[in-house]
Image (cartoon, rainbow, N blue to C red; front, side):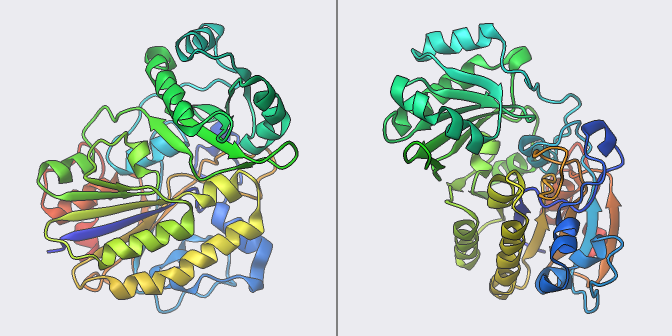
Amino acid sequence: MPERIVLIVLDSAGVGELPDAVSYNDVGADTIGHIFDKTEKSFSLPNMAKLGLYKLLDGRDFLPCADVVGCYGKMMTKSSAKDTVAGHWEMSGIILTHPFPVYPKGFPRKVIEEFEKQAGVKIIGNCSASGTEIIKRLGLEHQKTGCPIVYTSVDSVFQIAVHEETFGLDRLYKICEIARNILCGENAVGRIIARPFIGSDGNYRRTANRRDYSLTPFETTVLDKIKNSGGGVIAIGKIEDIFNGKGITEAVHTEGNLDGMEITLDKVKHPFEKQTLIFANLVDFDMLWGHRRDVLAYAEGLKNFDNFLPVLIKELKDDDVLIITADHGCDPTYESHADHTREYVPLLLYGKKLKKNIDLGIRETLSDTAQTIVDIFGLPNMKNGKSLKNLIF
């Protein structure tokens, strides 16, 4: 029986609009599919194709699907949201019945006033904006006044941008913790995000010292089940932030996709003595390329991951199980907006002892991932999801 599972989230790598995409203004979205459409014959992902990815890209006959050695399917998001926290929580076993609150016109005055009072600052911004655009527009004013830039997006986030050299990282993290304590109850946004940047006016750029302050999961997750049974949960990238540390035994933050892949590979090579979930998020797909609508960079990022796959697979032990998925979409070709898109996410599974070329169909919830993991590990069932164990072994 497998004792180790490697779960990798390609943040935002959706594979086509969900049936309810119209309710989210996302009709026609198809993140990976549209990247292929824009690049066509100049682009390929042969290693993910071997796991079944091409089988999930509807209507693209130019993509060969021979010699599939993985199990593959699509998963629907059942939670009424399309953000990072909702996606990761659902794949861990929690389905949100109500979305986290959003503030497209900025946060209520009472929230801002309380934050300013407790943090001892005055803020600028308080609007919905792109992170790169807001520091370009308000960065100089921030440096002159020392006032943090507060902004949001269509997601449930309270973001604070400051110049890390003039304002200070420790101070930024402290006021983010204050904001987390304030934004509760009816204003309980999914995440408070520290958004440090450096540079000078006209040349500001965000750094890798971002930190997310999420709500604590309010139900038992697959991470909790593993940890409580004496197993290990190794969180790579922003996984620790998304779960507010709950259910995690070891955490390693990363500086981007390449760093995340190297750390994941290192953990796979490392000896282990107990049931272990290695849970990694590769954030650049979403943060750097999806939201910024950079099709070519997104394609290059996918290619880098595809090239990494054979190296990772070579290091897998005979009983290891590899799961590759996503948390939502962020179609870089979408013209209506620059936010997350409501899409199916891919589900690719591989292991030396797993069946080959198995079509898992369309799964009704991302929680099938969690249910499959506890089933493989012989742990008590999750509240949500259906296990795939009998289909893949």
